[in-house]
Amino acid sequence: MDKANVIKKQLDKAGRCVYLKDGEWISTPVRAVISHLWRKKSTAFEPKYTELGVSGDEYYLYIGPYNHDITSLTNNAVLLVDNERYEFKRADAVFFGKEVIYYTGILKRFTGDDTGEN
Image (cartoon, rainbow, N blue to C red; front, side, top):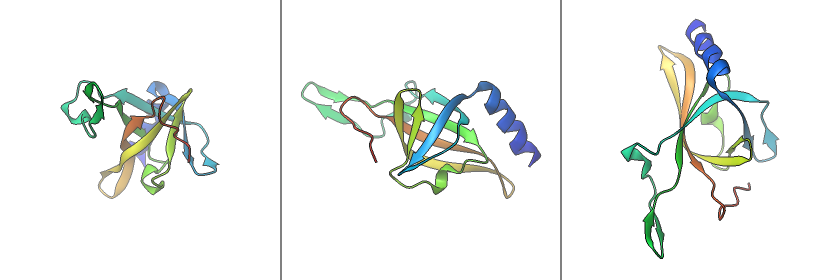
C-alpha cells in the first residue's frame, strides 16, 4: 500500500474537495484532482448538434485516491464539486502489480439544460 498512500497524500495536497453521489448515498469528502480536457483531441467524445452547428461538451479528467472505488458506482452516479455536477463517462483503476494505486475517470460537466438528478 506504500505507493497508493504516497499518491493519496499528494492528492490530499493538490486535490479539490469532491463528493461522490450515487442515488441517495453521498460519500464523505474526497480529495481528487479535476483537470479540464479542452486541449485534448479526445474531448470530442459526443458532439452536440445545435441550430448553429456542432458544439463540444466540457470534459474533465478525474484522478482520485485508491480508497474510493469509482468503478463500482452505477451509471447514475455523479461527482459534486462546489456547485457543479459531473457525470462519469468512464472510470478505471490504475494498478501497480495487483494493487490499485489510484482511480482515473472522464467526467462530463452538466450544463444549464442538464438536470443531473438521479
